[in-house]
Amino acid sequence: MLVPIGMIFFSFFVGAIIMIVFGYNPIKAYISLMRGAFVGNFNITQTLLNSVPLIFTGLAVAFAFRCGLFNIGAEGQLYLGSLASTYLATTIVLPAILHVPLILIAGALAGGLWAFLPGILKAKTGSHEVITTMMMSWIGVFFSSYVIRNILKDPRTTLPVSKTIYKSAELIKIDKIFPISALKETRLHIGFFIAILTALLIWYILKKTTIGYEVRAVGFNPYASEYAGISVGKNTILALFISGMLAGLAGTVEVAGLHHKLWDRYSAMYGFTGIAVALLAKNNPIGVIFGAILFGAIQAGGKSMQLDANVPVDMTDILEGIIIFAVAAEEIIKMFIRAQEKRRLAKIGTT
Image: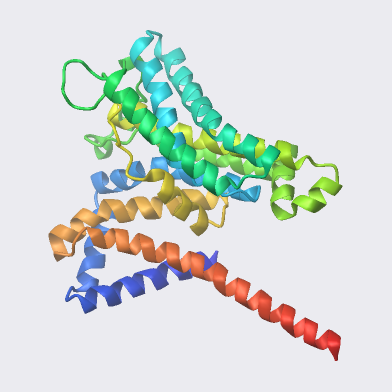
């Protein structure tokens, strides 16, 4: 727990040095960033709102990691989830109590099926999932773009956007459940609580169920798992399918809770940012919640940093990049230490 926190402080320290080099005041910039992310009801809810898709994509990447798999295609799975849920949310009329669960299930299944093929290829042919999930991701993004522009497009506009989803398919806003003044005029919806519950569910699956045990066992050592009777192929497919479902849910919740229509290329690279969230959280589902809120805060506070401290909003991208680098560098340092330890033990063995 202390290591990720240390990496975050290290990243902000490096970011401060970069700001000084380019003539900006880092103290003023960070105060503006924090104010824009955590001061005031609107800013806090905006931070939480930003974290919702990142919790889902972070969980998607983390779950696959636990099985030793690198699902780099969460972006495409997110779009497939958006596509399936938008189709059902704009074409079928149902009571809200049925409509919302239907589109959530459809979005999850669409994302899961999009990751299913790389899982099959990995299990049957040994093809590397980094390549296949990445290829499927871009196929998914461009396929969604085609469908939005040619099939689901709203005929009343020239913009690349679908029709507005039915009210019965919208996720309820938080202020409708808790009608207090602090939540008025905020856009936070119950998708945030769905994301939290999903993270708790994934933690439970990984820690307390046979499925989770087998997934983790394959992630630790696939050869030992195979020897112990655990099917590596089955768990590879299952892990990527569940991972895809989580990414698909990210797309569904964004459409049903925030946009209420599907825009072409609406995602702010949530699938790729989810990789950073999972790395920062050490693939712990509970840690993913906090990692996603951190990245959500950086995104929410970026505009304030630009307005109040005249620091370009691109600085937030640099900060995110430094955090990713710092987390990755930690693993490099560990690999180096392990290699040194092996050499030391080998030297002792030869003497």
